[in-house]
Amino acid sequence: MTARLVNVVDVEATCWPGSPPPGQVSEIIEIGLTVVDLVARERVAKHRILVRPRVSSVSEFCTSLTGLTQSEVDGGVSFADACARLVDEHEARKRGWASWGDYDRKQFTRQCAATGVDYPFGARHTNAKAVFAGDGRQVGMARALEITGLPLEGRHHRGDDDSWNIAALVLLMVERGSWRGV
Ligand code: AMP
Ligand code: MG
Image (tube, rainbow, N blue to C red; front, side):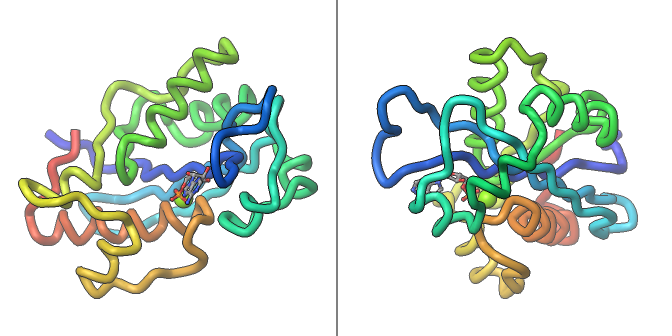
């Protein structure tokens, strides 16, 4: 039996037009999380956790991409506290979760390994981008919204808005009977 609630997660991270500057590494600065009710077939909550980077800073490039500024993320929580919140407030260990592609899962895995923070999620992760593609070509979230005629709500590359829009795509797949969540 598939569980009723799924966390749809989208992270933003420090970034540059090319490789990170010396001494810096890409770190999570925003975690967007939309809770989807697979039975009621609706999005039931939208959350945003801002995370203070430890060894990197928000470049101008990153601000233009994500809208996030250094001063904004300076007011965020530590990565360890963000992971604790995912577990304590969002049932991250118990609930299945989904993201568009494998980037978000891999970024958590990498950053947890690098910092010694416990990985906050359970084993049930679904790559919604792969499910959407089926045997066909994989496309980005914005393109998937275009293809399906769903609106891009909010700002693209803002974590909570991205998670909200990905959640709409998940619900469309549920509606169509093509959703294969774990
Ligand atoms: P997204 O969920 O598509 O908003 O992207 C997640 C993260 O991937 C961003 O916060 C960046 O760290 C990185 N990223 C996405 N697109 C780009 C890009 N065009 N150039 C560099 N980094 C990117
Ligand atoms: Mg995003």
